[in-house]
Amino acid sequence: MNVLVLSSSPRRNGNSALMAQAAADGAREAGHRVEFAYLSDHVQGLLRDCRTCRAVDGACTIGDGYERLLLDQVVPADGLIIATPLYWYGMSGALKTFFDRMFCYTSGSATDGDGVAAGLMGKRVAVTIACEESYRGATLGVIAQFQELTRYLHQELVGVAVGIGNSRGEVAADPARPLEHAADLGRRLFDARITDYRIDTPRSNRVWAAPDPERVGTP
Ligand SMILES: Cc1cc2nc3c(=O)[nH]c(=O)nc-3n(C[C@H](O)[C@H](O)[C@H](O)COP(=O)(O)O)c2cc1C
Image (cartoon, rainbow, N blue to C red; front, side, top):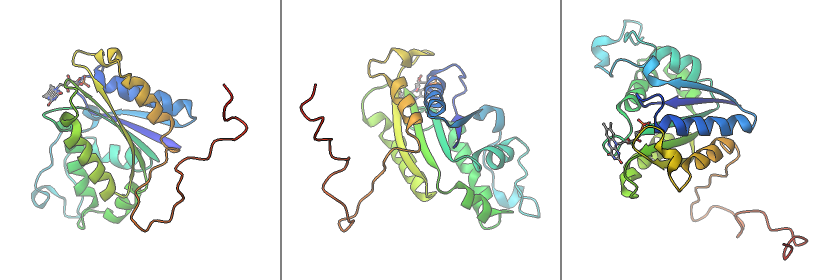
């Protein structure tokens, strides 16, 4: 499978990039092909009013690398690993702009809106977050946002790894071992079981395969 890592901190050797790297290593270990993209190399302009900056044929005219990133790397990927520092209890501005500008390529007046929308659907997505504060509430909002935007895009949110740190590279010292969690997410990006039941969803009373009776009781 093809995996694209989107790293969205301006600190290339910072904590979220380290977590992204760990997730990428995990995905490679599982045999997937991984590409790495720093958003700051591709996205310079904020979303504008499309009525004033869209070309007559509907194309976006903001002249940075966003379009190539979206069409050549994001759309063809089977899975995304999205890395962000926590900024003001949300995602980084660069990552928010990445999502904001996607609108120009999926709305009714975009040149190939249906094609881009179809290409965005069905991906498996893992998120890694680096932040200073460890209390659960700090990341609740941004995790809810990822849950909703992946639901909207018909993508599967496989998991979220949160690492606590502030100085560059400090997540490596987090006793909760977020780098291992991130690597595990990358490894299981396409295998992790995601369930979202309704009351009438047919299912057995077990979630995982029954243990092998031959092995029960063996050390
Ligand atoms: C603009 C800005 C806003 C921040 N807001 C928060 C915050 O709301 N909560 C928090 O825990 N850490 C916050 N931090 C700290 C970063 O999340 C933390 O330093 C993180 O490790 C940075 O990741 P990076 O090295 O990938 O850039 C903020 C840092 C910056 C620069």
